[in-house]
Every structure is written in structure tokens, then in C-alpha cells.
Image 1 (cartoon, protein in one colour):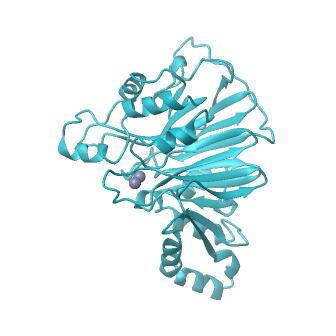
Image 2 (image 1 turned 180 degrees about the vertical axis):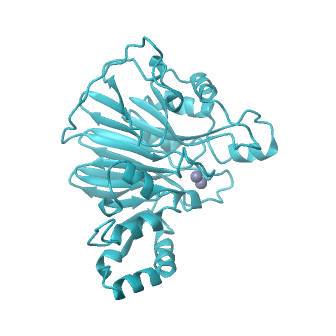
Image 3 (image 1 turned 90 degrees about the horizontal axis):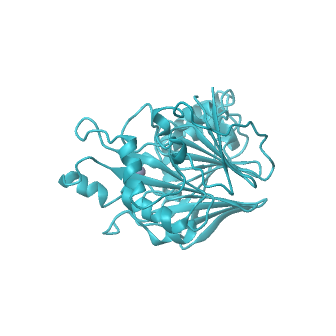
Length: 338
Ligand SMILES: [Zn+2]
Ligand SMILES: [Zn+2]
């Protein structure tokens, strides 16, 4: 079963106004007038699927952070957290169909699904890729790729010896870029731009970047892990879909929690960013809403209320496998049940 929703470009009716901000927690309230239509994806559409909306916290509901952007025939994956191959298959693709993985930084929760996606792509029965997997990122991606090749050399060796795998398909090609607003991918009208973000006050976690994808006048921004950051506002201005990380706790005074806030963005702060950028749709992913059992779960309604202190526009609290289709008539949001 899918739940099709449509946000008209001219309209002001957001998911939140329909009572659907807390998408993981129920369908539309009884009697809500939810515009519904099934639509063919046009060639100019930009489609974004939240594969994993989670954080380092192990969770079956929220896999590690990962976002699929489909445009111009390309399947581009942004971050490769825990469970990437599982969610990709649920989204209707296999690992051999990934045209590139773009990393925001090298915290393990953003890369620990990469090896799995790479290897499941070169196993013919599962992925059937015939050439190298392209891995993009800021400084450090060459080192990561070298480490992955080393760690899994024996998998490739035995599969090649067993005549199961073509060595060319098992290659991993890394593309390392400077983070100063660099265009890192530009093919057939699909443009991916990388920009620096601010993951921590002391600049210990560098590099850390976000990405913006543009295709035929449509756009999505993925913040990566960041505190409130001017570059997100700069590149997020009037973007169609702005996907931002968020962290929130019921007791913000706990010293451990203070440390988390110093590395991430609170819903109140995110609300200010959404208000400044005015996207057609704002969405949360990389959602840290409590860390049970030590820090109780923050209700989604609380997360929304705290965002609403500073922002009145369309808002979606992400969930795994939620898909946004962006074209000239607006944004469709499809809630897949996997
Ligand atoms: Zn993270
Ligand atoms: Zn991080």
C-alpha cells in the first residue's frame, strides 16, 4: 500500500497542514482532504528516496543515513549508512544499479554500508555491475577506497578465482574533491555540487560537506551532518526539497546531550534555516530524537512543535523509504511500506 500526497507548487497546503508531519506515526486524520493522484514520472522529474533516516543508533525502523537521488537516468546515493543494500532493494533497485555514492564525511554511520553495497553490486547474481563503482567525497575518499580494497581483497580474489566475478566489476574508483563549492558530477544535465558544512565548533570533524543536486530546474539539498551553517542557507535558498539533519532531546541540559547539540542542529535552529531558505518542502533525515533507553525518545509531535517555533512552511519528518518526486507541477510524496 502506498500513500500518495501531492503538494502543488502554487499551493500553501503542506503535509504538516494535513496533519502528516509525523508521517512515521500514522496516516492522515479521518476526514482530511488529501489530494490523491497517481502520476507517471516525467523525464524531467527529480526523485528523492530516503533510504535510511537514522543515525549511529542501531534501529530497524531507521537504517543508517542514506538518500537516493534519481535524475536523468542516474541513481546517485548520498551517504551509505547501515542497511543501504536492504533499503535499496526495498526501493526497487539492486546494488549494481548505483551510479555513484557521494559521502558527506567519514563518521562510521555514513560509510558502514558502503562496502556491502559495493560488494553486492559486483556479485553477478545480486548486482550484475560490469564496471567500477564510483565513490565521491571530500579529502579522505581515496584513503577510504584503498582501505576497502584491502579489507575485501580476499573476497575479490576468491570470487575471481572461482570465475564468479569479473575483476573490472569489482573495482572501486574514488573521486576526491576540494570542498569549496565544487561541482563534483555533471552529466546529462545532472549537476551535483559539494559545499562545506560545520559539524563541530572546534573543527575537529573535517572535512564535512553537504550536497545539492540540480536537474532541469529542480533541486534537492542534503545538509550532511552539521550545526546551523551559512552554506546550507546559501545553497538551500529556494531549493525544491531541503533535507536537513536534526537532533533533539527531552532534557537539553544533560551534559552528554549538550555535546550532541554542539555537533548537530536542533529543531528550533532547523526551523530558522527553513524559514530563511523557503524550500518548497523541508524534510528531516538523520533524525536523532532521543537515544533510548538512557535518553527517552522525543515524540515526533514535539519535534514538529519545536520546528514550528520558527517555521510555518511545508515540513516532512522523514521515514525510511519515503519518496519525493519533484517536477514542474510540484512535489509528490509517496509513502512506501517496503
Ligand atoms: Zn551522522
Ligand atoms: Zn557525523
